[in-house]
Length: 133
Image 1 (spheres, rainbow, N blue to C red):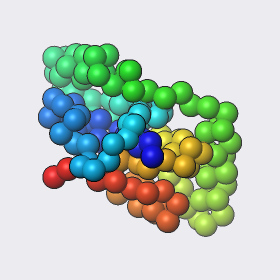
Image 2: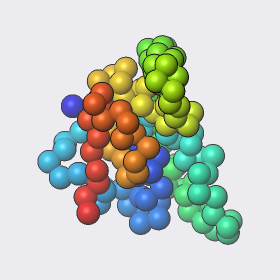
Image 3: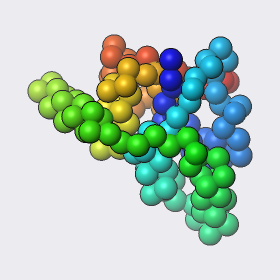
């Protein structure tokens, strides 16, 4: 089953210089990066203080991440709308990028590789995976 990679994992991979060490054992993928996770990474959820760090992150994106990016589709957009409405009905909300990433995963029926707890409220709908320790 395909596995989407969340921005939290991309950030950790950038800091460690490698994404392969973060992929969970026993999960063959294929792995992909939802378009909105790529966008969130590029916006810089962790803006480096020094230009050299920004350049390092951009190079990793160009050399490794870019080829893994999957388009945001109309089905993803429809799922995003339903997710936002569903969360709102429960008095909840998610940050936009997280909701869009979750919507892509839900629309495709895939798993999601994460490092943070941003998606925990959806664990009954999305199979969450954690990187190797």
